[in-house]
Image (cartoon, rainbow, N blue to C red; front, side, top):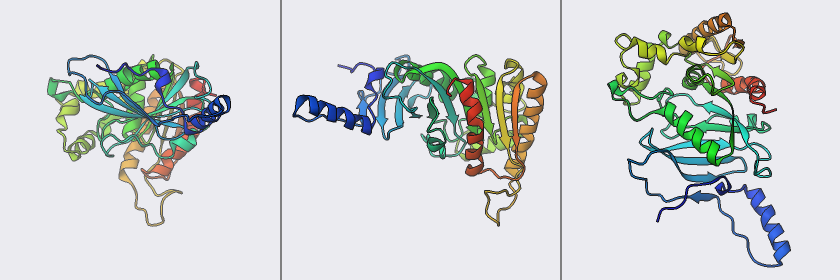
Length: 339
């Protein structure tokens, strides 16, 4: 017999809350032990491939703030991962729904990775669910074309349909959302916002690939470097030029409503304050800085509310992205009411 789906109350409580509840129970009962666990899981067996809809397989509370979700995903054709940083007061407000900030990672990490630098500390006081989903080592936040066959991996569907459904039905996510990302994730953040302008209230890119026409060969090389066929992503940049444009955040600016808040940051590739003395210039960051200039100019001409942070010297590295998130967070939080 299959187990029932997860519900909101199934998320394991934090260790500190478990201890408080245990103490209260002992005081009332005078004896006995209160069991606690860090894992709530359904059957490990995957559902039949014909079954529609995502299914939460496990929710593991690994710290006071962090819950790791494992989701059986038809869009990916496998179990996908997402980390959720819970807001302060989450356990004490079981009936409350929370705004959501998606943080999208960059390329070339380990499969299944949901890491995002020092996001836990940076967002510690933010009253929102901070969601960090896996996006594949080189998934580019897209439903892959697969040379006209489509199918898995469909990252866009996983993030914006399946994961969103799980968050809203079982983690108490509300309907106020913002999205931010670094590098490949910066592409994802502004692409998602432009492609789905009613889903998000603000977006931010940190050293993002926000005008992919400047980097077509580079994108193909990144995909190829992960052992994948670059034509499976968006096809050939010339033969499938329309498909490439459909996935270019720069081309989607006009879909965003006037006044939509965006934050765009980049360095110029020269060694900056967070780089070692022997650091050589970074040509990738220099190219991304040109993309940022393209996006900022077009976004402003369209009437978006642009915060431009082209900070000069700086390379493609974590200290700059963490600083950018710190700078962008007040705008992102304000847009979703997480203040």
